Length: 143
View (cartoon, rainbow, N blue to C red):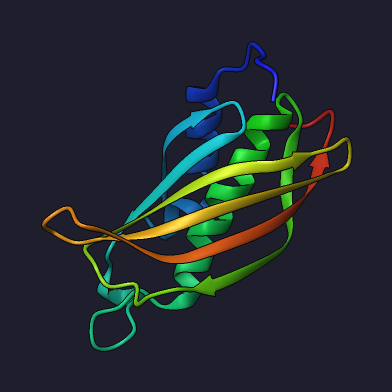
């Protein structure tokens, strides 16, 4: 990915303010060309008994991180999810989830990103609980 004069703080704030992102407590905590990190705190309203993040929430967080990384790679164009796949590798048990997204391919019409999702224990221990692959449509002329 080549460097470009993008306001990544503004782009991160834009993604964090999307209604579905904000409603689930997801925030973009880091963004740079082709990379994005998203996080969300545990919320019992969305929990799977007894105390797990459900795969659907893990997938959503991973999708946000992967597609945000793609957005950071194609800026000033935008990107919208077409498809994503979640592969769970461990139980998503912790007080927080963090997803580290990276753009794998950023073309003129399609972008592909990956996010590794980590469950963060209150002690700070990080456990890889999923990998998400996401495909997005590159949208030119809109932000």
